[in-house]
Image (cartoon, rainbow, N blue to C red; front, side, top):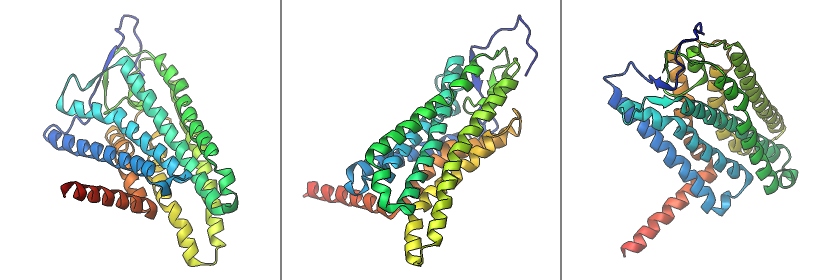
Length: 321
């Protein structure tokens, strides 16, 4: 926080520095992030299309997976296009209005919280499937899935309301340079000339509540899954049951590991460059890896992708005749 002087001009626009120290390597970074972004879009769209077209995948687990894929597309699209524009300086790519900055932070927080709750819902689905298979159809019906997914999106939408309101009450009177590639809370708080104690505390408590609530559901679900697997005598059955959870558990580990590190903190300042690297990991790298993890670790998804590609190849051959 900087001391506030009444005659200072209020900030109406921010400038995002992004990766300021990579001037010579800017084309390389632009190409790298553009490739990752396009790869993310193609992968997640492929999963959405395959699940929609293959009747074998019309089950609760893949219903939640399509929601996750939709979310990943929006999650990366909130930050990456603006970051890419900053690399090449198109249309004031580094500049963002005050309202645009708060909107970006709101949407990013909303989608991040929703992903936490969706991952928890997917863990619950696996828990019921493995620990209570006879009651699976009743407990995880299509109606229950729709209600659960709706609740995830709704609670995620409500999560940033108070933090963003408190952010809007802060005074920004200069400088207006955000040392990040998107409008994240921590670098914004560092620019405020108001007292940020309440905002910091609220951010910490809201982040902690979201992470603890969702991770508790995941931990309890997998604790019961492990307990059930230990009581299965057949090693083949244990491997088969665990294989349905392996991809989800890998995604959870990647996503929650970085989120716990980034957001459950009370300090505004830390290593800015290291924070950028971690932010790249959970906002760009993880959404790109998730579809790969689900397709490589899941035989049904691999099979559906293979059938879709084979059908497309066959249709192409038919047209060529």
